[in-house]
Image 1 (cartoon, one colour):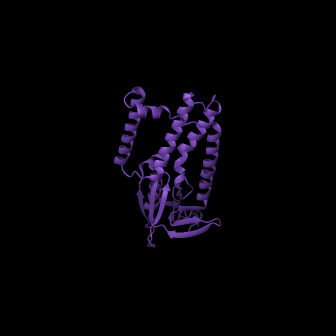
Image 2: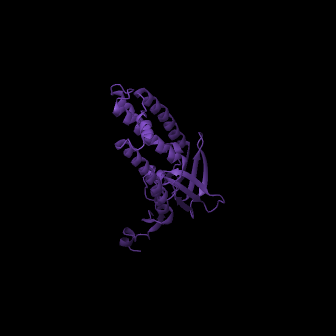
Image 3: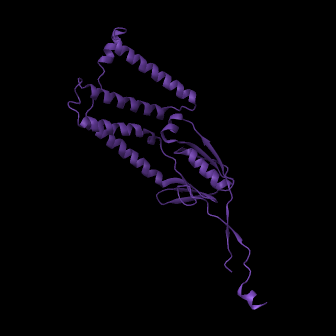
Length: 251
């Protein structure tokens, strides 16, 4: 071998090495799946309570029935709270259920407006509606906000001790205060997405995610996973594509 050949050896063939999966926003090479309790859907009531507390805190005579704005604020709070309870109590799996709900709500609202404009149509009902003056002061709403907010924060804290993590080669279940860990095989992982409640999907883009590892007989069901469409898309992209990078041999 000549001196020139020794000085300039031919480069070795490139080696194929696995490439780290693209970052998905949850972390480098991982996707977090956190099932939340139903109470997270009460955030509209939580927000409405603090808005009512702030308004009534600066309102004069909030317990006076003559204070029309105070009555309106209380009625709006009760309406939001009632709708939130309906979301928790019932499932609206299809758009037809959602359409029926809004249709009934429109009928009720139409009757209320009709009796308000023309009270002589049904004097008894009009008299009852006229005597309906739900009133509460700022102290009530601050207390309500504090209680519901504390439960809300406690629920958000507990989910940090029970969540799932999807990686390119494995599915991890973190649970317990001592960080117990279960491992499942991620390749050939089957994923199913279900939207069982239209309202819950509108509130947090949440739904049910069903994971079926190839080496497990039972399916893993995760309820109330926020932004479920985005999560399902990221998992499919991570596990459904093979990415490689070219690395020069260091020899």
